[in-house]
Length: 290
Image 1: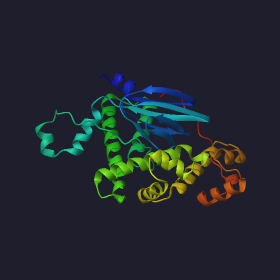
Image 2: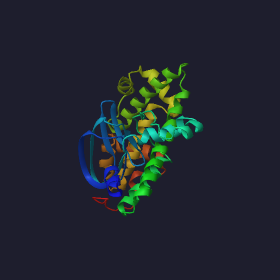
Image 3: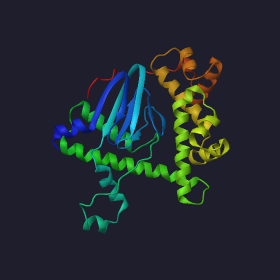
C-alpha cells in the first residue's frame, strides 16, 4: 500500500457544524473536539464528548449525527484488515511462539463497543495523528508505526477497562463479563440521554437488568451511582455550551434543568464557579479538511 493510499484509507480528520452518516465501515475509532457526536448501532446509543473515544467494530452498521452552533472537529481512524489481530497477538501469545511463527495471523479482535473516557493512552495518539494530518506530515513509515501504536493503546485501554468486571460479585468469569457488558450498555444509554433526565428504570431496561441489580453493579464497577454519572454528563455538556457562548438560561434548559437556581447550584458545586461567571476563549474554527 502506497504512502498516499495508506493515509487516504485510514485517517479522516476535519470540521463541520453538522453531519449525518449511515452505513458500515472497517474497524474504526472516533473522537471529537468542540462538541458531541451521537452514534447509534444495533447494540445501543452513544454520546461521544470531547476527550472520549468510541470503537465501531469491522462491518458494524451505525448512524452518526451531530449538530452544533460551533464547528466540531472529528478525528476518525480506519484500520486495514488484519492489523488489529496481528497487534493483539503480541499481547496474547508467548514470546517463543511469536519468534517461531512470525507470519501466523492472529485471532480476530472484537472490541467492547462502549464510550471510553479519561484515557491517557488513546486520546494522545489520536491527537498526534490529527495534528500530523492537518500539517500534512503523516509520512508512510511514521503513519504505519502510529497506527499500530494506536491499536496497541486501544487494546490495552480496553483490557484495563474490562478488568473492572472483577469488581462484580459473580463467581464465574463468563457471568462477570456478560454482566459488565450489560452495565456498559446501560451506562452508554445514560450518557447519550443524560440531558433528558433518564430514569434508573429506563437504563436498567436497556441493560436487561432489574433496576437495583443495575444500580448495585454500576456503582461497584464505576465508583459512582447511575444518577451521579448522568448529572456529571449533563454538567460537562453545560460547560461546553457555556464555552461556546450560549446564554446561561438556554444552557440550563438544554441540559434538562427546569429551574435556573437548581442549575446554578449544581454547576457551582461541580466546577467551583457559577455558570454566569464561567468564561472561556472561543475555540478557533475547525478546518473543513485535514
